[in-house]
Image (tube, rainbow, N blue to C red):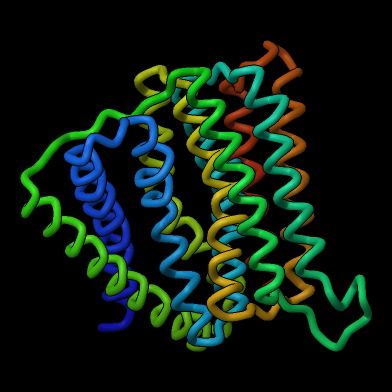
Length: 316
């Protein structure tokens, strides 16, 4: 019972820890006269990906590769279908031309690179597939290019992140507290996920694709839902699209460099499904009202997500 309680509490620690880390680090950066733009692109962007990163690193160290990869794939699927779907239901999302023409295709590129680097068995006929440290370095190289592109885009479009200032000591305490909360929350989630999988006869990839993936995506859900409620469509969809690229290039890249990750070919279906829904999101931009993710499309996406979850539970 304690394990399950800590598993649930772990998500609160993970999300709160990321929040403290972002606020504390942003405040320190502001004190040293770092621009809001750079804080948004670095501290905030990396901070919102901290839950997935911590869970992945701890899962990799414990040898739970299926949980690590399942978490990333599941988070990306939940981001598109569940989070964008709910946001569009709250308020139709007007999407920028640059997001449709460049950032959604970048998501598809990230999915293709993941498939290409993960399928050693399929491509090279080796004994098993793994995301090696070299693969991790390739992911990170793509990530650097993505960050460079994002910086240029933000300068043109004038995006910024409002930052609240705290005293230096309070900021440091928030940073330290955030790191501790992330570490504890991540540890409890990974331990709980492994025990749940063992007790109920579930695979670690199933736990990663469902419970852990949705849990680590809660910050994105909260941010996108609130942005949609405030009619800030750019933030709602940009948050999801950027997060998906971060998850593959940054988190899987960093995780693979720390420790190579064994890849199960059974997860190829989920990679194909992730590619399918990315293409679906792109096509939705040209169906009905162009460049607007409409309510009926949001409802469709949520239902597709429910069917997907039902299928992978039956699949086991």
